[in-house]
Image (cartoon, rainbow, N blue to C red; front, side):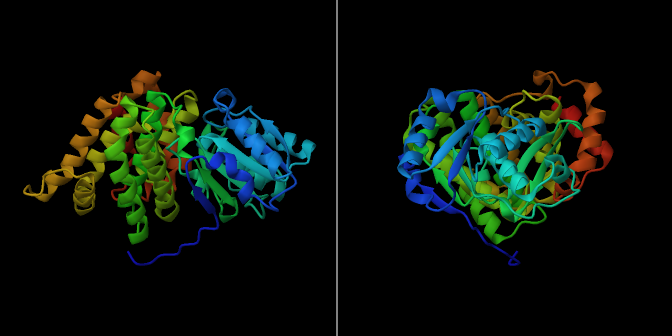
Length: 387
């Protein structure tokens, strides 16, 4: 628990209105910036790109934008972004939006600087040797990618949603402006916050956890359970939005220390094969089954989590206290509109075999990071239970 290595090369600016002050924090990072956004258009619609553009001009930076990125970013999209960046002479990469935009910025910055094809890095054939500077501006409270060394991209040819891990892709600067989260609709607010909650829960109990990871995770859990329902019901509450963005960052720091576990390992194949499934929604469908499977292997950890959540169960036996976390998650999913099952996304029993194969192929590190390591049959059973 006290075996800790911690180095965060990211400068963090967490402040309301900080989107308009990006220029104050990017001196000498580059000459031409490429702003990467997803194709939904919300960054332009709500004026966030315009605000950023004004700030870049104040910094004397040239810039261009790239918006051909899906909500689950694909390797072919990122390859097109790399070609676009090379053609336009970009040397600074800004991810504006959710984790998809930030992870894409990381992948572009590192692949362009290191050379070669992105798929070689996704498949473990090569490791990044260098990266252009990255600036992360999250406008959702879910990913935590702005403060960690991961980028999740779907390898289209293999239909494999994999994480590249490199200390070179820590953003140089993370600008977290709670005001940019005010325009998130209720369902997306719930799904992104649930993603952060899954990050925190999995990192708290994972085999690689330590006291620092648990400190970050506990802070995330506490703030999420106190504010997630408020935001879903009243999205303009800036205090609650601020707490959720803070929690997302804390959960990002937690998984940077200890990674996620089986729940994330099982979700990635779902949103790789069903690309329209939001990652947080997939996690919401899987989390109850994961909790029930994992509880007995980490009872003391879940007792601590129950205390962090403020669940009033101190007189019960430990296993009942741990189970109260499971009960709470079920109630929370109902209250925020995430009472979903895999079948709601079009997943059927015929998909399960492929999902299990994928989990045991490219998600194995997260499987073995779980407190209880499942067999093939147990993974299949968990999928079926979530169907």
